[in-house]
Image (cartoon, rainbow, N blue to C red; front, side, top):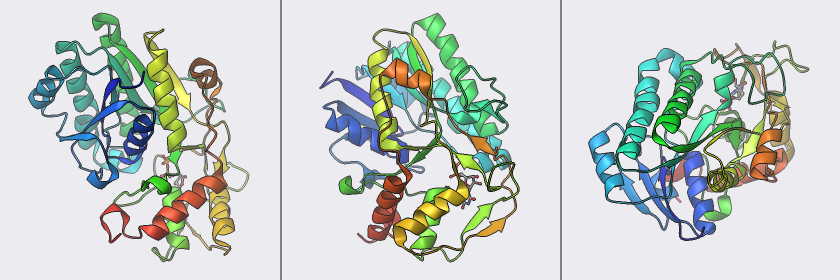
Length: 332
Ligand code: UDP
């Protein structure tokens, strides 16, 4: 499929920009649509870029009408569990309403393929681990609910209007591509690995681990970290698979869980210095353990994550953050 024209919505964000890099390396012709609310223009090179918002449906529909994309990749979303609890309106607007606008514009311009970034938050508190795709969906945060609502829209639009779709349920996206100038830069940073690394580099005086009384071996939460470029590869594989099947729902994880303290130990190892986190209260909305059963994704996509080793992820994040202590907008 080289030279295939694709549109990446949210391509300036953390996962989106790594997908863009990977897709360019695969020879796709890539265009990016992003409102730059959280993304970074400087994370994108060699692509046609359109600054726009899906919630301006007229503008987006006009854009689609003037182009013919083989597949649309949708990465643009608000994605902080805690914020979604205090400000659900933002999540229904930026996630549900925006995805509705995208699907409407697609249907009116005869665009019929979409690969959508979903999340393991659609499962809520799992009663069986590792989590399979057929696990009950009981999201406990507005964030998870908005992603599940979009999966339902995809199902219904897919059935009624012949739109082929993939919903890829990410576990914890991690790592970066420092050789290509890509890192993770959120403001504020809320994710564990970048926060531990920031602390290790002295950019943050304090490292707080939220909760050490969970029912896990060391009392801290367990997550399944998957490298962003492994995610990117799975997106390309899903696009190819949509040639054969019309709907895909898959977990993207490694099947291995790491506790928050194991992550801290990983960063201590990498920087050769013992880090001293403090324990704070649990963070609302955090399930104790989220680990994927990725078997279905491995079989369906003929894909396997091979960059998701913690030591590799930590080394990359340390490198990018040492080189970019102020993130994308700081001095080079
Ligand atoms: N976490 C933490 N301190 C931080 C950031 C995160 O203890 O500064 C914990 C968080 O409570 C959760 C785990 O690290 O148990 C992963 O959180 P993250 O925000 O990275 O991803 P999430 O699982 O929420 O998508």
